[in-house]
Length: 77
Length: 385
Image 1 (cartoon, one colour):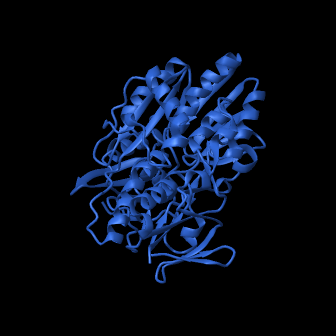
Image 2 (cartoon, rainbow over the protein chains, first blue to last red):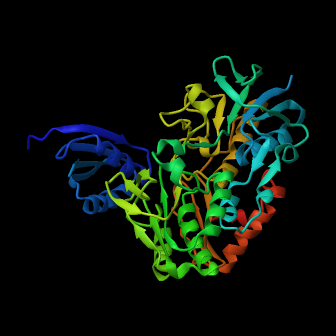
Image 3 (cartoon, rainbow over the protein chains, first blue to last red):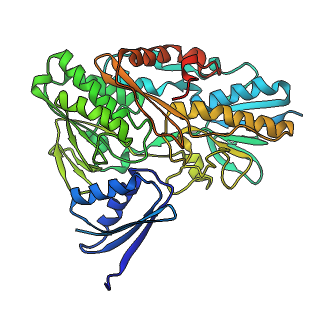
């Protein structure tokens, strides 16, 4: 996959729903199809990002965890 | 010479920390509280004021009467803090030097950040806002009411849910419920951030016919047509709009370069010290800690800050630390309430709503003025969740 992440959003240390709200804000500035990477440490962000993607139609390309950091890649609708 | 401690902000946290310090150290400390109004406002009362269940006079007291006699009160704004020199510069030109500084500067409401908010939205986050909302609700004769959040983080996270549940009962009492629609706009896919609380509250909302619009983060309001638009691009119509305004840290924190991009103070979660300035501590809504901005947070943090500063002044090792403890009562309407008790490590397990917690909240509201600012905490608060 040659897709390039347009922006990395570091939301480590923030608790829900801040990572979601800030991601939604950042996506507004980007064109449709753009990829953003989101880093978070709140475990609640896993179900929240999944539900948010389903509800808003943005695609959750990756959802992974490493050493307590959750990494999401989202493609804007 | 006694050690000099300056406290900026005469809310719950600032008042309690000042009283505890002067009580513990007596003549070894000179505590000064700086507050722009010299008035202490009991903000949890705004909810009741808006719904016509409290009298405005009950919510405000003269700060001087809440402070110990040996604590000095200066009624003025802090313009700037100079941490290198250890001085707080005052708005009228004076200066207060300190050995330790406590920032209890709270949160600032910035409704102007949301286009259309000031023209169209009501709020219950300020005294004036709650009074205006009370008038609007008195005249409300049916239609669509939206309750939502226009910025995160905001004070007292359960408040929008609590307001919505109480509002529905209020409309029923007034006999206009059957021609009204009540909708809660939530930033997440559930009624409330904390899942256990959502699970408890959502069935109550359903039973009472309150709608929930999920992932609805208010971005703009168009008063000419009565429409709110979310960050996600969705729209909702209203006849009466009630929004939590966006919050920022205090102006003096921002002007002094002591806050993050939103003006919240970078605070050590355990010691409550400013992350870059060891003689500066932060309490309550002003911090960047990932926990609820609420009076109870400030209430539990103040003794930690007072004890740590007292140890530093006495030259002993500080022992107390903050574990993230928060407690919130949550009214579910109709004379019932539940309670959320949690800390950094333990999520809340709220009990089923009952009259007991409603009366607990009522009692706490009544006892507040004579217990909390002075450090006489009602016993039932001491029990762990």
